[in-house]
Image 1 (spheres, rainbow, N blue to C red):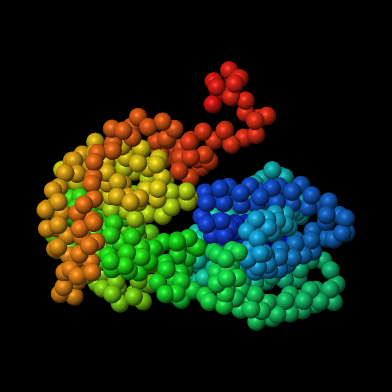
Image 2: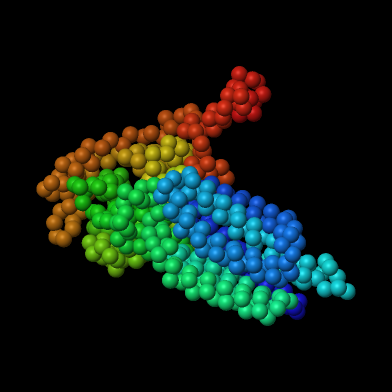
Length: 527
């Protein structure tokens, strides 16, 4: 085999390996409700598998008495089949037990990585020709492998996952592995009969997997997202389902919104019903007397955007949403879909922090964020001291930041160190350098400005809700919170809400007493 072909194989296996890792992280993170440790666990198990494959691959090859190319082709074929079936088997296991399901999927990561991990050393051993510099030849093969691994996140992560759902991407990668195995097998120094047999087996495998794909991956995302609760939901499935490289957005009948398997709101504008605590959106004019320019991070169900756009004093509402799949889902709900074409609403597909950094001259009266649970991965991006200071720099005088703390006391504690005044409404933080001292009459007057379909929103049955909002007291909580014990100031560096174990902030207290002995001086000094 020519050295150029060896380099092409090294690049192809690098691409497949990194693409598979992206799919592992994608699925296992969803199965664990987006907890930040999911990525670390997958990466750790993946690297262990790669390392074991590199360490033991040669021994396996010699034990099986296989030629290097035959071994590589066999490992690619077996890993392709294992990769294809790992997801539906793991999804089924998750419906029986979340712990066992995650264990099955992590073992699958280990096994598939082990099989692909032995390919690169084998290629290096095979590709280095006699009479040439070993170091130079291995360096070229290594370069090709790295280039292929770089293409994996770019082509699969940024392009393929935007074009096809996760289930189809799994099938595509499995078929690419099988076809690559066929090419290598045909180049191996074996009999024509053996080559024909392997070729026929690979073609038959693809011919069987294609029709089985629909059956094997039926309700796959529902199983991954809902784990043991799936059996109580089945045979009901997502009403609407949209996928992009930024995640999976699903609507559970009749109006429950889920993002990567975690509750993300409801499609409702009714303050009297208040099924999604939409009164928190209506409460904004009771915090700021004239919110004319509003910036919102995260579109979600679009309910908040529709409510804020309905307020007549709001002249411009800029919404930054990172996942375009939400727009596709919102379009299915006519009462809220109008926000997508509202002339005073500008929806941008971007990251909220990046957008603010790129628009240093933008100024707003209110920055609103109905964000996800504080314990999920990447929640720090919108809860940290660093981001709040960025938001503060983009506020007009008297402006406020109003966001969902999802009951995290650390989020309130952090906001109290950035702003002079802080109030709470349900699980929302309202923070500003202006006191929240609007009179009840001003609040009532502002709330009565909400109109929908030509009628006041807070008339009739909703009048009691209006009076309840007017009666909400907003004393300054900042001074007391700044001296509160046991709370963490969330920063980009400590990612406190994502990795903090104990609510008190002292994770070591959860260790067994034999490992942590608080009466010892060294323990007090260390912790």
